[in-house]
Length: 173
Image (tube, rainbow, N blue to C red; front, side, top):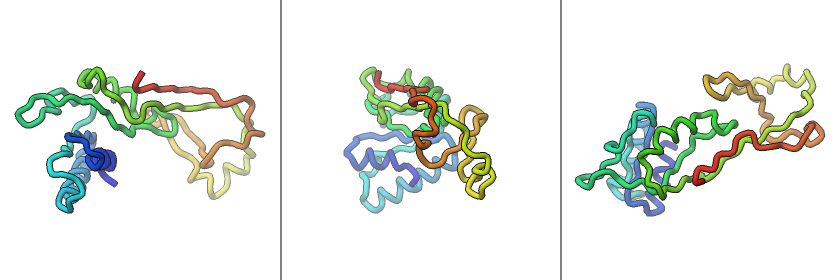
C-alpha cells in the first residue's frame, strides 16, 4: 500500500508526518492514498504531508510547518532495505538527510544486517529448473550483483562456515 509507514505513524498518534517519496508517480499515489484515508476518517486531516523529492534534494525548508518554521524530526521511519541491506540506497539516503534530523532522532528500524557465509555450490541442474528464474534477482549499486534466493537459508550441510555479518547498520548508534 502506498504511504503505508506514514499512515501507520499517523494512526499511532504522530502530530506531523512527512512522507518522502523519490518518484513523482510514487508521490502521487501516496498523496491519493493519504487523501482517501483522511476522507474516510482513518487519519486526521493535515497530519501527513507527502514530499515528492529524493533524499539528495531535501533541505530543512521542505519540513517547514505552517508558520512555525522547520519541524524537529524526532523519529525517522524508513524501508530502504533490500536482500543485501544497502542494496536499495539506505547509506546515501541517510547521509543526505542526517543534517536535518534532530540530534536525538531515533530510527525505525534501528538496525539492519546482511549475513554471509561460504557454501558449496548447489547442483547444476537446479539452475536449469523452471523455478530458477524466480530465484534470480539483481541487487546492489547499479544492480551489478546476481543473487540467488531459495526463499530461505541454505541447509546447514551446504554451509562451509557459520554466517557472519557482512553489513551491520546501527541506525541509532
